[in-house]
Length: 277
Image (tube, rainbow, N blue to C red; front, side, top):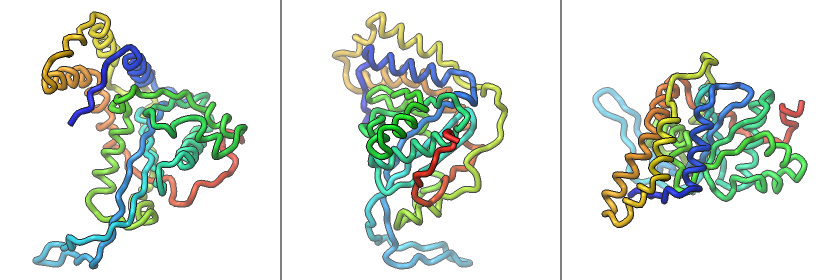
């Protein structure tokens, strides 16, 4: 089932803003960071699993106990190969505020941090001012230049790829009973890697962006109206793939060089940010 948005002027304007942000050459003073969340269902074994032994595979009982849910905020700076995962009890505004604080603290020398995220209601300055107060909340939020993806356009957020990697490489099909296990089980030795600061080879979004703009300006999207749903989906998905295939491949190639990992399992502390030192 696909959720296909109407490609109106607001959608295209936000899409172009995100693609232009991705197209910028790598600049450590203005890092581009993508952020998104993933819910995690917690399960515990009712009976202890049996490890593999010579001549017999590992066995795990099909019965399990539901232990609620948790959440993981995933952030990635694709052109620098930096990955951040923040396991939290939930996806509340307070947790989001602390994640944004920690992200800002990772880039103390940046003049601004370009932050790409979707339109979730907690993705706003109010989350920070409610948690940290007006003065510090405004100060942290002003460290960022926020780029919102269009409504029903979260496919533009490269953090979606990061979440896919997290689900396959770290979470897998194993059972995770609690938040502490989630934090410990996904820890990796590093969240970054040394790569060249030259612009990475990858997508040039100009041609794809202007193609979509031309289609919209010429009114060709009106041709989708009245067409069968399957055909409409195929046509629109084809247009979207023109804008995404290259940077998906570029990011996937880069991600193979970098381990996924957590910044830490302790609760976030309200200490003085590095960018204030």
